[in-house]
Image 1 (cartoon, rainbow, N blue to C red):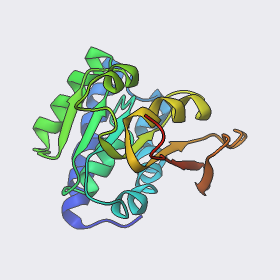
Image 2: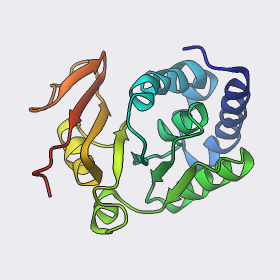
Image 3: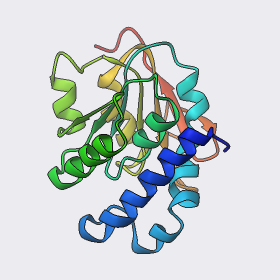
Image 4: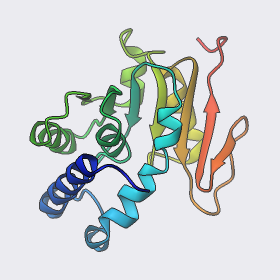
Length: 186
């Protein structure tokens, strides 16, 4: 996917930080460091049109890890507030470093699990979009995202090639399923 020059520069800087820190923090598989742009950034950018089509409001990346897909989308869409949920302190610290280095005013790093976030009044039902990549099996990922969604919000989950599409979800793009929240879910 093509992005603007300023976005491309920030994505390159982010990639460099992942390359620098990955050996110590196990951010991505060693073989993926060399092909980080193709394997991870390009894959995450496939969600950009979904994010851009959402109404105004905060978005959440649950189990953000190395910042995938939340940091990539926050870089590509600087007007969107992104909350990165990452309970592992070393990875949350890495995400904070990326936010500081790239001066990403639209990103908030939260060292919490999905369940802890859903228990907080300021986060529960507070996101128009919630995404997960490599968090858990698809059905479990959607279950974890739903409490974070505002009414009418959308959950998006990356799935493997042979994964079954969860009940109530639909394939949005190859390898990505979505599910909309409904007002009755409290």
